[in-house]
Image 1: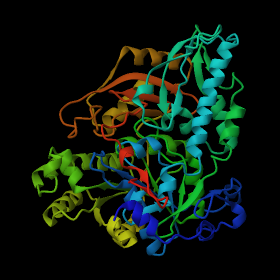
Image 2: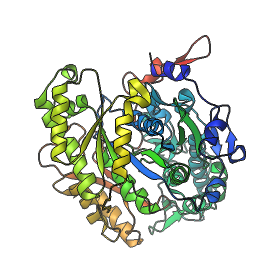
Image 3: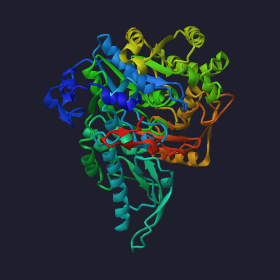
Image 4: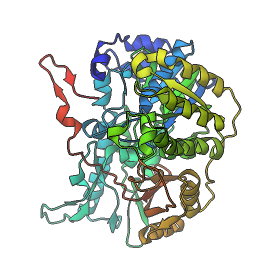
Length: 553
């Protein structure tokens, strides 16, 4: 049975009933139909003095086209914790339409470990990403309108791009202002995908509506001839943008197929932006549940690093335990085994690929000082010999393994992981960051590249050097680093799956994000607007004669 059919056949509770299980009354939520709701922005103030629950972070090895099932494990663990009697809240990101209609698919889990209503969450949901797209593009329109009517602020260079929440490589570079009207100034421009917009990053890092408005005002949208920054506040834009986002900033409440409460809010890309759900949602979940399961995007080198070095640094939070997700087939793939042979037993390829897993474990344990467990998303063709090999290798590192079958069995398939996580979360840790804010920009990049990626050195291209010099001149060096890198490898080469050999990290440019309050570092050939694959998922998505959506996975 397909994921969408499983989700459609599940018995969901009305969302006000789900809300009551975590202490929310009818006045605390705003209904969006039977199974979705916004949580009022007054709730967090009412819970201000309540002790936080335990925070469990789900991350993974470097992802492969085979899929590791990280979201499926996160949902399964939340259901598993509930099954063993723990008051649990799930906190996830919102799916982007780009991957849904592209190659990756949706982001609502799979099998019997899903959040629902699956189709609605994967599509327009409550309109948050549309609101972010509109706010982003309103700012772009205000910039060009200002230039049209005389350019009083002296724009010499516009750096703010428009966005759309779809994969569309044709929009990476465009020429705008070609109507020939008297005062229009044509220029080369481009689009980002909405989830790579600074508005999305701000949305997910803001503490409240006032903080959101302040951060929007601080966005640098362009520079004068003298390289003086021009901000959204200079355009008097922050109020209008905040109005567009006033409802979106309220977290969304849904449920898993087993009725575990799930707060899904915000969705920045993890290989471009910081890849975490909103600070507002995470902090609220910690007040509502005794255990909160949250997920960082892509592998631990991207999602977990940014969760820890950016989100935790900004909020004062830290995870009480980290689950690193892997599949045996993906480990063999990282070891050089072809996709055609991946179902065949091979300790040789598994041994090579396990190096990827061990590097991520070492980062989480030794660099960040956190408690870690490995969750293997089990497949029917995984052999006992392969599982035992992995268990022994992890024991050498002092790390437990849990075999998870939540895709097939729901909460029952994650009970072992749930019990082990509860024990692990009570252990003392020694949390620290990978770098200090006082380090220079180059030092911060180098520490991440060498400590987390295992790189030999960092190579700065000329454009990156110039950008760093400008940031230093503007005195914004004390911001955290957000490295944009391929998700498929620890290196910046997506084809180097084994992350083998001595490799450097090449930085093509460095971009100051004063609203998000971090510095984006572009490496390799990273794109802020993805393209569709040769056969996009959109070709399989349809609606049948009964009005049911089909083909979303």
